[in-house]
Image (cartoon, rainbow, N blue to C red; front, side, top):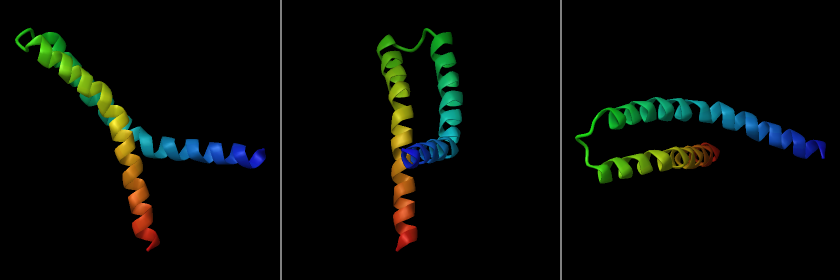
Length: 79
């Protein structure tokens, strides 16, 4: 049981080390995009909808891309 706890703690620490920068970048860009969409009425509502939807899906996609990049880097370093 202790080994499982240590593995979960290690996984959490790794996630925090690797995930804080994409989260900060996404938050900053998301806020800017949200402010632009909120402040203007000249953008068609359908474009606003799709832009907001893309913003919602970009965070999980960024974390998936980060995980794949880290796994690829580890595989390249091992060979």
